[in-house]
Amino acid sequence: MPISAQTKSTAAQYSSSPDGFIPAMAISNFLENKTKILVIGDFTKRDYTTLTAQGKDVSVLDIVPLEGIEQFYLQSITEKTFFADKTFDGIVLAEVIEHLFEDHAALTEIKRILKDDGTLVITVPYFSNVQDEPEFHVRVHSKRTITRLLQHTGFAIEEHFYRGLVSRMPQKNVISKFLLFGTSKALRLFFGAERGSAIFRNGCFKLEHFLGT
Image (tube, rainbow, N blue to C red; front, side, top):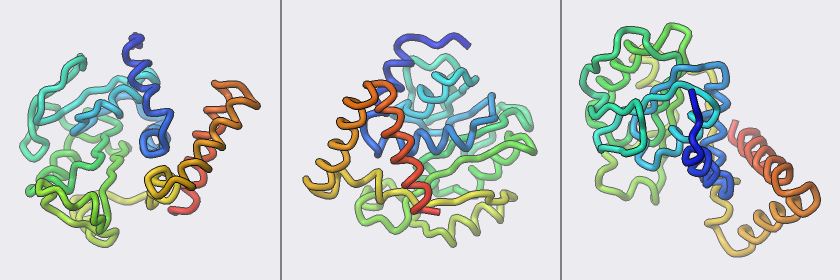
């Protein structure tokens, strides 16, 4: 698949803040060996641009029209889609499940269109006072409830980790923000912009994954 300069540019914006690149890196890692991907609910187009920039065949399904996506489908995942059984080897459901009244129906449909050896990457806030404030969040989840829901719809959980300690550091206070981005600047000065940024991103992701596992 050809990769446009616009796609590369949009994907690059998620390389500056841990709250952007850590979830993007986590999703990419889980889908490392997958090629045909469906992203469900991608209002910011973060996952579409990140995965497309890696050369994957990415489709997006959303209830809100999104421009600049070649394979876009306007529909709710809570209803049966026109996709054939076992179409995708990777599906992304990031910060979506808490918005759905018919979450069981959504996961049942995802199970139908996902290959037997496919991977579903799902992210959801747990008991978050900030993230669960919006009135359009209709579910409040914990690890236990999301595990129960996934298992009841036929999924087996292979890996789970909590996110937030590193990725939310810049939002905590001025000191943590200074330490984090000071480290980023020092690495870029010492190793060069591209390599230093890569070391910073990989280090943040590995620390977040280790602490959250």
